[in-house]
Image (cartoon, rainbow, N blue to C red; front, side, top):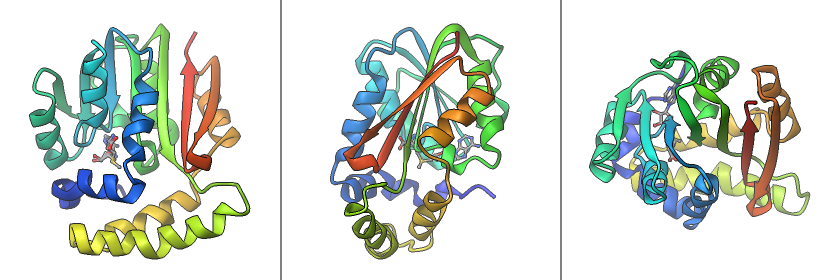
Length: 214
Ligand SMILES: C[S@@+](CC[C@H](N)C(=O)[O-])C[C@H]1O[C@@H](n2cnc3c(N)ncnc32)[C@H](O)[C@@H]1O
């Protein structure tokens, strides 16, 4: 079952900045580079990707299944369009968007392939999909520290800042088993990506998948 983000919406941005030491903002800036035209941001949350997209002149539409996250996003990006909609059943015609983005959202999908397939469906043939997701780093020196950080420190931040330890215990648990790197690229190919590659940020703590449809 998908995690209910309504519970942590109010403190979500602050916790992101603290947990990633502000790196999440840099990762999003990289992800939106070169994206133009009509862009759909799936699982838009509190709208940080939408802010970056509109700064670069894109016309952004955001979808999410958390009313509380959407309410914050609407305040941050009043010029954008927002819809309460599930990534696994997007309410758009085939080939509608020039680009689709999804930052830290795919790990929450109930059916990953279905969500990715929907994003590919609504993308124009010349379009580009960019997915950002957190991952456990491969580096043998960094991995143990990262595991300790996500297992003990992040839940503590969750408790102190969001008053919700459980939500931030779910993060490392869901990250551990989630496909990353080449495994994710394979899944993207299986849902129709013609060309897909990935890039690591910050020792692989964050992965960016760039997908060309045609
Ligand atoms: C970790 S937050 C990421 C928010 C934002 N994209 C960002 O960059 O911070 C995950 C978001 O995915 C949304 N979400 C989870 N499952 C979803 C689904 N099936 N369809 C649409 N949104 C979903 C949640 O409500 C939440 O707002």
